[in-house]
Length: 259
Image (cartoon, rainbow, N blue to C red; front, side, top):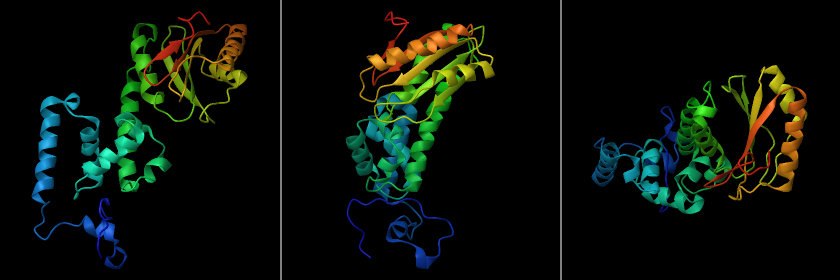
């Protein structure tokens, strides 16, 4: 069977029956020699060496993405797919955070590739979260802002998170509210305050993103924030800030005089 040009295939299942092996799976099978074609093996070795010697900063986004794709697509040149993903989504971060359905719609992306991309995204989120959880927020404010950018800045739908703090301003919980769309997320002030009581929280930080990239708060953002702040205040809690996360910067309600 002739393989179509520019197609990519992922690693086959270990126990796939010969009769059910597709052309894509067959293309990833070991060569008769048991080795990769030399031009692929040499390219991968050089790229890995550059990464280990000089770090991620020395690699453009598409090459960093190639390194991620090596495991999912072990026996082909993945540079065209890496470039295609960057062209479609914009940069490395946006590729990782793109919705699964949109990634799978890209020619050459299958379940294994999707899993690798989402695994790297999850690792980035875990690392950023570990720097802020169970630590004082005030003394680690930059880490909190970095964490919010990592998990929210490149989303294509709005997300609303509540960071719950104890009386020493230690972050004890980070919870996302469900139901975001491209330009709206429903927030229930009563539920947020109720959850704060359950956690025995003393203060809150509100965070949401603007998929448009512009972090300027809307009139609805301002009204909603005041409702939550008033509800919290009646129970002796404080809303320290509301951060609106854009693509490359954030806006603080507190710093802007809106809270």
